[in-house]
Image (cartoon, rainbow, N blue to C red; front, side, top):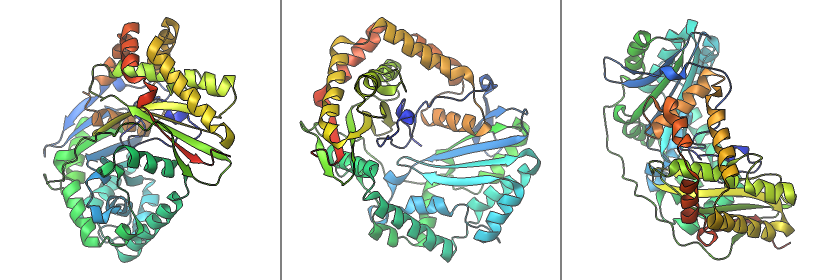
Length: 445
């Protein structure tokens, strides 16, 4: 669940989102008690952030482990996806059909997923059936079945997805970008039909024991439950997990120099997808907030960025264009994407380069800075329209290493950004010669 720090959610054809997908997404619209984030620790030592709110008799829980596709064995790429798929496919004395029917009876939702650096799950339940719903999740961790039919079905579905990706412009562009910038790094590796077919149940159980441990676990709970009610539930659900384990160490990726000309991937289609990527900034860097504001001005604002104004509004060359800060733990980039008619692709690439160059040399205006800060800070406290969205955003803050009071402090960090801060960041990062471009389509047509 590692995210793009701003903007890509607005793209009609995004294509450069990495796994957090996306950091600091615009938060939804109802006043909530987010100022009251409690840090709850169970008797067994499991810690969770809790927003206790009884307005709606529902409970949402989001949890995640550090470790994802980047730590998979090279010959078993895809095993984490298969494991995540299997988490609600039967446990204890319930096979797939019985487990699914029981979830329907309880009006609960429970599913898991995997990204490059994280393996995550979510559960939503009614307050009235919370005890039974928590027990369903408990059984998934303590007595996961891995029956033959759903296990083979998961592998078949993943293989179908791999084959579809061969002609998916976003997938083709992402793969080409990774191969150009970080060949050989775990982020650049991908699943194949061969690696998926090689996955055995014993491999999945081994990965589960290595990955889903208490020491790598982050939990957020939002809804109609008190701290005293939550504490025993944390031990009930996660108590069977191993305390710790050893996973492969993922090194930081060091990008190769940008190529002078766009990388062209031929794919018969009426439009060309353009993806671009340049050096980015770590989440913990003090200049992150200035970079976030700068990104909004460049391409992160849905309908008020320089790229949108120049490429879409003024010239009508694209339906959507946007940028974001990719802040994966081991690779941080400034990236964006757009799509245009094949015969206009070169022109759009040049316009992107020109806007990056101009912003780097001149920086933003005081008016642009004020507008960006007003939007970024003004949209944030409009609050959150569902327990699940609150929980998902809070788990993202936990992944970023933020403290429990970050929600209260967040806007002050943006308000403190000065025009000189943003100009300094622009001079550092807005250099078109540092950006790699990938074009997927028939850009010479």
